[in-house]
Amino acid sequence: MSEVTLTLSRVRKLQPGEIVWDKDVPGFFARKNANGSISFILKTRVSGKQRKLSLGKLGVVTVEKARDLARDYAFSARKGIEPRPEAPANPSPLMKDAVAAFIETYGMRIKPRTKEEYERMLKLHVLPRFKKKTVKDITQADVRAMHEAMGKTPRNANNVLTAFSKMMNWSIERGWRDKDSNPCKGVVRYREMRRNRYLSPDEAKRLGDTLRCVIRDGAESTYVVAAIWLIIFTGARRNEVLTLKWDYVDQERRILVLPDSKTGPKSILLNRHALAVLSGLTKVKGNPYVFVGHVTGKSLINIAKPWKRIRKLAKLPGLRLHDLRHSFGNRAIDAGGTTRVLGILLGHSDEDTTAIYAHVSDSRAVQLVDATGDLIAQSMKDIPVTAGLRAGLRRRPLPLKIQRKPVAA
Image (cartoon, rainbow, N blue to C red):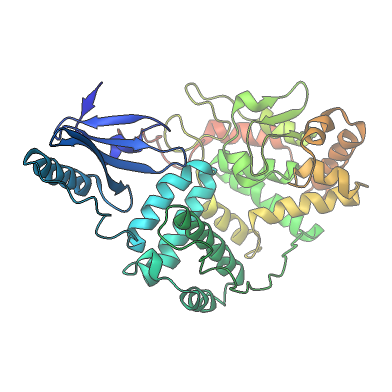
C-alpha cells in the first residue's frame, strides 16, 4: 500500500476505483468514485471498534480541509471519543468551488473543446453573478434574470443556459440540490435565426485574390493560409483542419480519416484542389501536424486574428470561417448534390455512422466533391495552390522569426 502526501494534483490523477493513502495522517485516504467524484475518507478505531468516516467530496471540501478534519477526528478517536459523524460544514458549496469541481470532473466525460467552452461560459457569465451564492441557493428567477440580461446575444445566452443546466443536473447527482430542482428548467430559450451566409462569385474572387496576395507578400503564415484553403475546398470544420495530422491523410485514396470530430469518427473526401493544398506543404520533423503552429511540435491553435486581417483586406468584414463551410455546401448543391450526399460529405450528426464510412466508395460522392472543388476554384479564378504555398514556405513559413519552444511544465 503506497502512501503519499495528498495534494490536489495527485487526487485529480486518480482513476475510477483507485485509492491513495495520505502518509501524514494515518487512515486518511482519497477515492475516485465511478461517477467521477472524489471522496475523502478517514479509517480509524474508537475503543477498539473500526470506524470509516466520510469527510466530504472534492469541490465541497479542499484537500487541506479534508486533512484537517481527518487529523481532528483521528485525535478524538485516540482519546476514545466518538468523532462527530457530521456532514461537512457546507454541504452545498459556493458556486465558485462548484464550477471548478464541475469542470474538473464532468469535463472528463466530454470533448476537450466542449470542456473549454463550458469553462469559458461559466466563468464569464455565471460566476460574476453567483460566485458568492451556494449551489442550493440558485433559483429559477436568478437564472431567468441572467438569461434575459444576455438578450442582445440570444445564441450565446442559450448556450450559457445549456452549460449551466448541465452543471445543475451534475450538482443534483452529488446531492447539492434536491431532486428535480434544476433552476434552468422552465427558462424559455430565445428563438435563434439560423445564419446561412454564402460567398457570392464576386466575394469568392476577392477572397481568392487576397489569399494569393498575402502568400506572395509573406503577410501571413503560410500554414494559416493553407488551412483556410483546405476549409474552402473540403467544407471541413475549423478545428478538424487545425488539428489534422499527417497520419490522417491518405492521399492515395483521396481521404482524410479523422478518428474524432464534433460528430465522432468521420472521413472527408478530397478533390484535386484540396490535394493540391496538402501537396504544397511539407512535413516538419518532430511535428505530427499538417498545419504547424508557433510552438515546436504543436499545431496551429487559433487563426482568428489572421483571419480577421485577411477578411478585412478582402472587404468581407462579417465573413466567418464557418461560412466557408456553408459556401462549400452551397456549391455542392449547385454541382447537383442531394441533401443526403451533402450531409455525408459535411459529416452532419444525423447521418448514420456506417454511411459516413461507406461514402468513400460512393461514386456519386466522389463525382460531387470533384465538381464542387472545380466550381469553387473557378469562382476564385483557378488558384495555383501548390506553387504559391511552396514559395511561401521557402520565404516565410511562420509570422515569427523562430518557433517558440514549449514552456516546461
